[in-house]
Length: 322
View 1 (cartoon, rainbow, N blue to C red):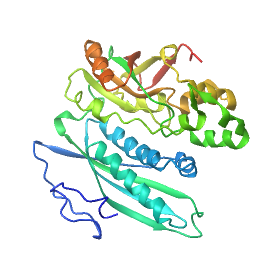
View 2 (cartoon, rainbow, N blue to C red; view 1 turned 180 degrees about the vertical axis):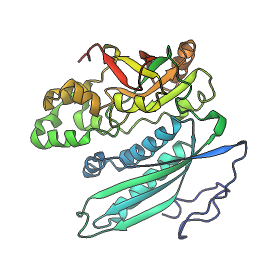
View 3 (cartoon, one colour; view 1 turned 45 degrees about the horizontal axis):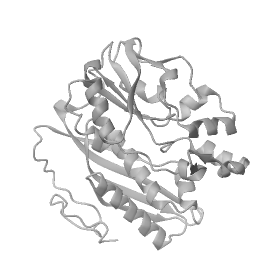
């Protein structure tokens, strides 16, 4: 465990085993550094993932979700701390979780600096693991991206997801329990289980070179609450977002879930990302450059609407194409 958490970052002044992590507040290159903090957990997806031996995937889910949440504010991730809560500790499982978290952090240029493992017999069932983590990031104060620059006439770009990411798994688990035949379904040549357990896409590497663009006015990470419940969080006073549902490039997995669960369109919109992992609000003059840049990182981006006058709401028009 100690070797997994070993780091060469000179700002970290102590190693694994101390009561807390000491980090020197040194941020070269920043005139007015602002720390960006977030805590997250991967929801009930973690139950499915651990049951099916997908520990590396669920650790990526946790780290990637965290980093996306701060990246949409223009922040660079620095440090992550985790907590693993279980009924009975299996050293191999916990070691796999920590190794997975450390590897996921390293891939995104940040460091897992420690955390907590808590064994709670009689509180948490044996075999169940509850994961959570927090991240510390940094952004130059003058370059914070918070949606305040959004204005009427801006374009709303959708950036593709690879599936469910980390939301909507209570319904998925219910479908597996009540209609186990869903596990025999193939989606785009992959098994249903493989598709629903794909790790949450991380967009940080693709976004970091866009942070300073004046055409980029706001970003929203599409998680629980869907497009409507996340894009509205960055809309400034006097604006609204008009989204054409017919333009959404729907992933087949969502049609399968809708069909098996008999889920109304409104509920699908509120629960799932439907193939959109991020929305970017931009000046239309930057659309070609931004979409081309994202494509270099394997992310498809396309217009789904525009910013109009309003009261901070997301307005849907058209119909989802199943």
